[in-house]
Image 1: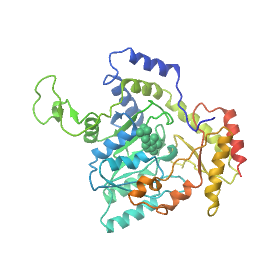
Image 2: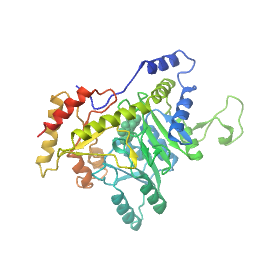
Image 3: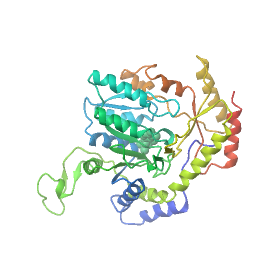
Image 4: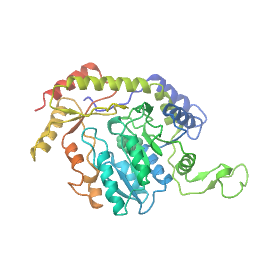
Amino acid sequence: MIPYGKQDINQADIDAVVSVLKSDFLTQGPQVPAFEKALANICQAKFAVATSNATSSLHIANLALGVGQGDIVWTSPITFVATSNSALYCGANVDFVDIDLHSGNMSIDALKEKLKISKQNNCLPKVVIPVHIAGQSCQMQEIHHLAQEYGFSIIEDASHAVGGQYQNSPVGSCTFSDITIFSFHPVKIITTAEGGMALTNDTKLAKKMKCLRSHGIVSDQEQMHEPSHGPWYYQQIDLGFNYRMTELQAALGLSQLNRINTFITRRNQLAKNYDQAFIDDKLTVLKASENTLSAYHLYLILLPETKGEEKEEKHKQAIIQLRKNNIFAHVHYIPVHLQPFYNKLGFRKGDFPNAETYYSRVISLPLYPELTTKEQKHIIEQVKALR
Ligand SMILES: *Cc1c(COP(=O)(O)O)cnc(C)c1O
């Protein structure tokens, strides 16, 4: 079976992890700060805070921005559940902004409209979390303008987009946001097995996230509420968590970073092959817009529009057909508002029509650096054979 995504691990990665195993520190040593510094440099951001996964990064990002009981957080319905869950962890109320069908990203028009209405009803969001679906940045400058007009903060969920660019700047530079989150799950662009990172240019936010990642504890005198008792001393100043990344993970991440450009180039090449192959077909491919370089975490196609009941069946049959032919086609994502847990919160079918149309048509085709030309040919043939 050709998977939809897969990690790329070489001997250098293995050596990096083994050398940590033989070293003094398995956690809280030099690798994590080195990985943070390297990624912050690549992204041209001031600070980076590594965590156990992107979900924990999202959680402490929300908390650092002050999200709490009764606050409102908006995101896209086309994302992994972790994005919206992270706001629920803080006691916030979540709502969604429908997507733009051409990009799969949060629609700027829908966002504008929803902000206008919410201002009248006095229920503006505290934080908006745009999600860079498939690795293509959202139109961050527009979202940033709206943030200034309506006074909300921005967390970019760039779980798919490390290595990508927006307006010739690296995703993660936080030029148009408060915090950017990356995921290093094995299917993503670079991996640490489990792992995440929160980037920011704001000293206070960085300090707060570092503190929350490790039990709310500080050992820096400057942040303490009373003078230190001595060299052993630390203080708990907040209710934090154990969301730390291990040294093994950071060493793997550092080693993977050496190949991030190779990965992005290869992913873009494979995406271009798909684009060219499907140019005359009735499929819609979700293309990168001109001012972005997609990291191409996913290659997404939309099946031709069909009406009524038939469309769900056609979509399902297409995926079954591809899997029968050894292609592990997938769906990213089931709209979050349609999940039973979110139904309990009051969301209903019909709430976000574009997201639902997208869900009835979208297929993720295999895309990862080691995908061979031969495998890709097979995938293209099978997609073209779909009826
Ligand atoms: C993978 C992913 C997450 C969660 O990442 P983890 O590192 O697995 O916690 C969050 N948001 C999006 C959009 C993702 O794709």
